[in-house]
Image 1 (cartoon, one colour):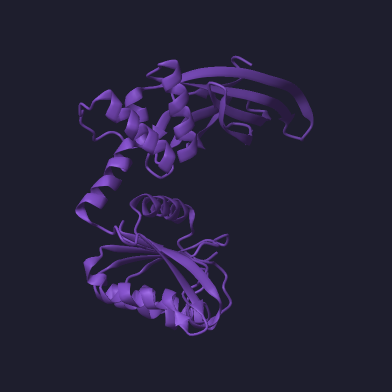
Image 2 (cartoon, rainbow, N blue to C red):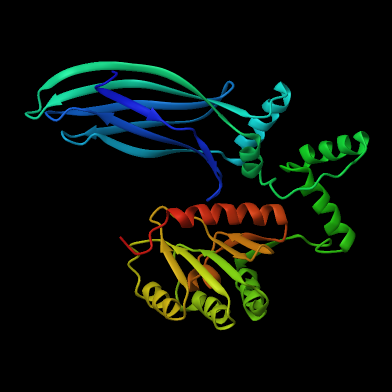
Length: 335
């Protein structure tokens, strides 16, 4: 509705501020009425080729005397989606990425007394391009140099990349280097348990805590924590390690809050997420313990728990990506 109600859509950008990277559309919703409200009820959908990137249902009301509202609409580009888009792009021999944004829905106008003044449908499709340089940043390819390799060798590396489920060929080469250098060749994964007289989850935490002076940062996700589990983090903090702890909000356990208070006093960063269910401990980008055990006495000593300790760089990297994304969405104080 030109000159009355309009939507401005700016050039989208790929942001890698958080992981996974996201395609961001800055959109401004405008009207020029001083005597009525405008209500937008829209369904926004983004596609690359025939691939659906994501959709959002968007509701917005512009009250009288407010001309515009600007929003950053983000569509997450998960690893599997990046991979799929890249393969389609290669098939078409395209460099830049063309996105299609579809807008469908209703726009209503209501008088100040609430009476419906006008109702109109909207259906529109816009195309935008993001540059190959932005796309390389999203893929994590901005700091690369050219290396000439025979086509036969590249074909073999590509076959291994697909077979092993890696995203980039350099992950395949990095795995070769690990083997060549003899790093973590014998055991890259260990199965850990809390069962009867075996406490390998707890024992492995204690082992890492004892040598934590070698670490810079430890990321921890645990629904519950008490002094039993906190003692390992306390040792890390005293060794100068940065500790980031994700935990549940609104936990009604005295020991839980006592442990959090001690950790805060020692400098741990703590955030809260009421939907948290993961139990992870990540040591720099070196290792991760992913298990069912909380960092409390029950989880480490009594309940039947199981998990994996991994040194695999790809798995650890993906665990960090997950943790950091949840961390950014978590609350800094208990709600």
